[in-house]
Length: 270
Image (tube, rainbow, N blue to C red; front, side, top):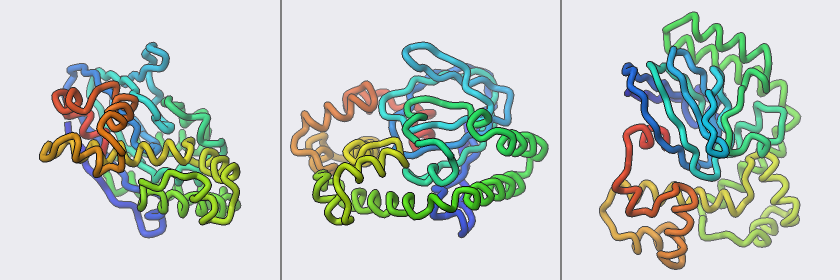
């Protein structure tokens, strides 16, 4: 398995965290679990392999053009065959610039982006299949995204505001008082909750928890400090609270996770 990252152009840097190519040249099947990241992705499957994801303990084949909604709990996946996947990883709020629907409708599932956007993205997928050149493929994706931005330009002000609020929460993850956050931005706490959920699929408190969880994953993987220190460094008041949140996002305790880190999961959490 190999994963390569590519930076977006200057015009798309405010919206796209990175592009990536994931390739697997083995026919062997595998199973893994995806954890909440706070981000959404569009993925174009360009190989012959088959991916499946589990919803309500039932595995279904994912579409050739995937939209990954916000994952808020462990999501089991499995795979067979050789893969070539070209992905777009957005920031927490920025997928909303490119979609018509409220983001929450996609939570905890892998949706068919062809059904959501229609002909333009299906044409893009066909174009991506026609070329093997990665630079050309990214050029095609960026042209597609820029056209979508123009179509949704009326949404920019509200989504920009959401991005600004989330940046503030991320800089200070210990700030979890919704009333204080709303007051800083001159809006009511009710409107704050509605605005963020509409454009990210997450509540402010859920976003805060996922940010702390992702930070804890990095610290646990380094395995150079005790869990008590990791808990306090991630803004938890005690270790039991940290373990409870961690288990809700992974299905595992921090110690069990450390003993069961898989190469695929490490790739997917980037």
